[in-house]
Every structure is written in C-alpha cells, then in structure tokens.
Image (tube, rainbow, N blue to C red):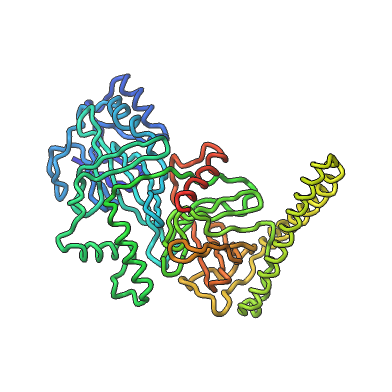
Length: 482
C-alpha cells in the first residue's frame, strides 16, 4: 500500500514500483495515450490509482489497494483493479468533456469562479475564492463543490462536496455546451448540529477569516450577513455559464487575465482585465449588491495617459483631481467632435457629396490617431523609468501596503451605483500601473483606492476559440445582471 498527495489539478507520483500485473494490452496502451493528452490531464496507470476525497480540503490520498484500511482513510472504495481505459474515456471523460474549464455560477450579484479539472480518475469542480481581506497579494483559496467518478464500470457517479459531512449524492445536468447545472440530492448533509448560527460562524471564518465580533463596522456586518443568507439558500444547486480567459497581444500594456481587487466593505473581488483596441476593461467575475458580477467595473482610456505631479503635489487630492478632470473634459470634447463629424458625413452622403465630406473627416481622424499614438508612445517611454507614487491625503485604501513606485498612469472611469445596482453611473478616475502583476485605480468621487493583484493560477481549457467568442461571452455575463 502506498500514498500519494495531490493538489487540485496537480501531478502525482506513485511511490510503489510497478509489477508484472501493471502491463497493459496494446489496446489499453493506445487508449492510455489518448487520455494522457493535455485535454484531460490523465497521466497515471489506472491499476495503481485510488482516490478518496476529504470534504472541503485540498489534500487527497491515493491508495493502491482499496480493500486495505489504513489510518484515517477508512472508507472502502470501489475496485478499480480491472478498470479499463475505454470505460474511463466513454463513461467519464467523453461524457463530461463539455464541463471542463472555467465557469461563473449564477448566484445573483455575487457570481463566482469555478474551475472544473480532471484529477486522476475524478472530475472535480473547484470553487476559487479570493484571499482574506485585505491581503490582495496572498494566493487564492479553493474548495471542492462536486466530483464525478466511476463507481461501477459503466456508470459515473456525481457527488456533492458542499458542507462538512463528506461526499453525498448529487446530480449534474448539461443544459447545453456552455451551460450546466448542479443539484444536491441530500441537502441535509449541509446542515450543522448547531443550527444556522453555527453554520454562519463557520462560513464567516472560511469566507473572511474572522469572527463577527472582529468586524466593528456595522455596514460591513450587514453586507456579510446579507451575503450569507443569499448564497446559502442555493444549497449548491446552481447553474454555471462558461467564461474564457481574455486573449492577449504582444502590444498589450500588460498581460490580460484574472486579478484580485479590493472593494471597500465588500472585501476582495475577482476582476477580469481585457484589452479592446484603445480601451482596457475590468469585468467583475465576483460582485456585490452595488455592482454585480458581470458588470464592467473600470474602463481605461489608453489613448489618454496622465503625467503625475511630483510627490509633494501628488499628496494634494485637489491637485490630482484637477489633472484628471482636465483630461475628462478633453475626452468629452473629442467625443463631441467625433459625433459631429459623423453627423456631417451622414448628411453629406444623403446629398450625394460624400467624397467632399469624407476627405476632411479622414484627415481629422488621422490627426487624432497620430496624437493618441504619440501620447501612448510617450507614456510607454516614461514607463522605462519608474516614478514615485503615494496616495493623496484623504483617499481611503483597504490595504496600506501598496507599491510606492509606478510605471505609468491613464485616465479611466469607474462604475458606481446604489444598493441593488440602482442609478449606475461612470465616474472619472485614474488607472495606475505598478508592475506586470499589479495595478490600482483611484475613484475620485468616492475618494477611494482599489489595489489589484494578478491571480497566478494556470487554468486549462479556458482559452476562447476566437476574439468574437470572448466578446460575446462578456456581453452574455453582463446581460445576466442588467
């Protein structure tokens, strides 16, 4: 008997030498090569694998002989001694291939990030959670929500992993290629002996890493209690929609991807940074009652870099506000001129004089593009030398451990709204690029600062098949909350 410990999606190493019985037929070897492809990630001899899951933990024990009871792993598991690779492919991997990858659950305004991976003989759905507020640079946390494996040769079993009583009966329905739903058939396994109060305190320690007595801000207590009541009612019966990682280009300001960001009393949230020509967009993957998941939280205008003043003047909020508002007015004038030019072009086309009207418009566009390109080039040149950075006096930050130097800054807008996403509006702000993995945003109207740090996890089966598919995905997740 041997043990192997494995993390989600990680590789394992068997500690027992293979014997004569481990030799496979030519047919099995061919299927084994098929399963070893990166699409599924299966890379071990099925005769040597046995996995037993520990609910809500990231450690699994793999045992060679399931009939041998050893230590705390007492459960006698199904016999994989005569498991065929064809059965695993047909009944498990091929049947559930459409649910591998990244997904966003439909949990009202809160959303989430689910990663479905192949781990040994299991398909496991891991929910990724931000680190505890306000430690934005800490690694992500994760917990299993469901798993699928073969209990018998021709049948795959779905088990719910929610709660603290171990795996129990669950169900998965693949609605369509980019959507599936989960259902727990034994929700009593989610209940705790101490009732809702014990469930809330346990959830609070896991979600926030603290007790309610440690949170003195009354509004923050209300938000936390509201989230617990709202999310716990689902009992892991959820609908998931596929999301893709953003495509990247060589000329992007920084590598796009997923980031953790600070959002005041709402804690840390997950944001997807993507680039769209002269714009960069931050889309919420997890959200809150003010700005729900799927909404575009920040937009950066890459055509309008901002030169920060010296440190002494940077400490003055009014000075920084003046600079940003001047750029906002410049952007407004440019947009107005562009709209007027388009109106003139349409009017000229109706009169049959399109050629005479189009020529000056083309010259104006070329001039604007030249100015924007020059501005971006100047900003990138200045990025070669870092400049000192400090938050202006009066700007609130959840994390005081922010970088004290930055590469460049751009004008941007941030989305703010009342509770329930009422009266949403885009307000001016400033985007600060610190390094390849961190950026910040100052919300002028809120006098607040958000710090974002890259999620350094390699997700498989998450690339968009095309740029059009990614843009369509962004529209779909935004429409869910509008």
